[in-house]
Length: 142
Image 1 (cartoon, one colour):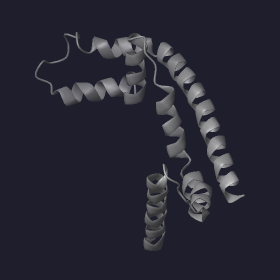
Image 2 (cartoon, rainbow, N blue to C red):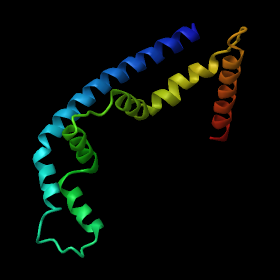
Image 3 (cartoon, rainbow, N blue to C red):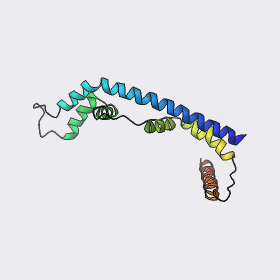
């Protein structure tokens, strides 16, 4: 039952991450399309004759990032290159944001499991047992 619960929660988390990722990628694409005019202002900084050529790049960069955040600027760059943030990247972002689920429920269920390997899975069982020991060691240090 514990293994079934663990598998259920992992699958549920994976599906939620996928749904989140698809929505996030779509919203990112829409936002990038809306930010193209702001990106034009950023590009204008490179041809603006009123900016002193001796001005440090860091200062110009700071001006650019005051017009558009770094993440938004990256999204516009991807948009202009007809690319998108990957769904995989957004799925990992979702998992990173759900630290309490990872460190709470899933970790506790994982630590309750006992793995036994057969001929082809001995190494996997050993790796999983090692991971459990390492996680238990981390918990003891906290």
